[in-house]
Length: 331
Ligand SMILES: Nc1ncnc2c1ncn2[C@@H]1O[C@H](COP(=O)(O)OP(=O)(O)O)[C@@H](O)[C@H]1O
Ligand SMILES: [Mg+2]
Image (tube, rainbow, N blue to C red; front, side):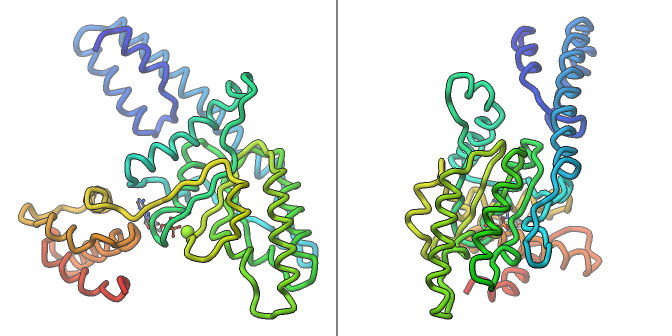
């Protein structure tokens, strides 16, 4: 690669020391050194060091901000937190997604990362996102991965605390939550958010639930924070149509296709030795239509069969057995 291109590429790297991209960058520097391009290698090293430091500072500051600067709002009655902070180490972020879906999610991340530049031109990043799709295809995980990639604190809304059996309190809790965190850059996740719009079986509650939906609508409409609001839904559960219009982007997280199932398997089994004789094509065909979560479970179970059987190599029969054992979940 020519020098200018390499330098430009290195300038665009953002990451922490442990990130894959930084490891690759260090390998390139080593390689250039070996080729006798010491001067170029030094230049690349200094660009990389500068980028790592600024990313670390940026991520570190954000990470500190939430636990120190903000107390998570609590409900009035019991003083329970209205959201849970999930630590960065616990965020799931290694995903397999179709190219188009990946691009849409990347776009959210890129816009957030460029929010100052966008604001400079009077433009606003996509801030309120709705992710929809069947269960186990990575809706919640996508939200976590966005927080991970942006180095943002991740807050998961606690509907069990928000939805109160006392008249009027649910709405008050929602308002309190939105007000309490609006100045903090974080990812606020409304997971399986349709629950709010669902009518309760007790007919006396219908009016109250209607009111809650309306409050949520107006809160969403007015929501302008420093961070991102991500909501997920199964869609099969009827969601109030009016809610859709309040989002800046609506992204489907689909079931994995054949190619993605294979990538999921490879990713999940990356640390397990696999027999060369496995007919992956045949196995993948049997998993078409399965959710990503089920594919991961099937191959993890197969890996466990290998280990508990004291065998060194994962074989076709392990996956076949696991497929049969998991048929229950496909119904
Ligand atoms: N696109 C994906 N890539 C990799 N793993 C996935 C993906 N989708 C789901 N999984 C696996 O399934 C589990 C459940 O995913 P989750 O995001 O909770 O699903 P949901 O769409 O129901 O929110 C994850 O912990 C992960 O192991
Ligand atoms: Mg989920």
